[in-house]
Length: 105
Image (spheres, rainbow, N blue to C red):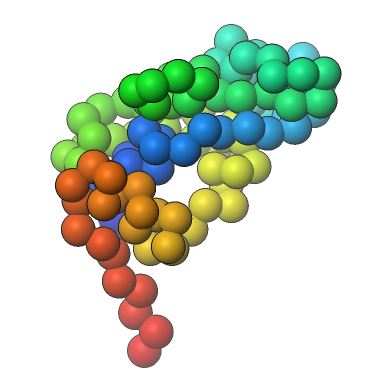
C-alpha cells in the first residue's frame, strides 16, 4: 500500500499547472470544472491557486486518509510526482509529517 493514501501533503503544498490540452474540452481527461485557466496554454487545478492550498480533487483528511477524486484523469504533474522524492518530503515536512525513505535494496 502506498503512503500517498495516508498523506496528501503534495496536494496541499504545490500549485498544479498543466497544459490546457489536458482538459476534457481540449480532448484530454482532466475535468474542466476542476481547473482554472491561467492563460491560453496553461490551466491550474482549482484550490492550488490560493493559500491555503488544497487541490479541489483531494478528498479525506490530510495525513490520515486521502484520495484523489480524479485519480485516473489527473493532470501530468500529478502523474509524474514521485512518492518519497525530495519534493514529496518537502511537502510532508510543511505539514508536520515525517519524511519517507526509499528502499534501494
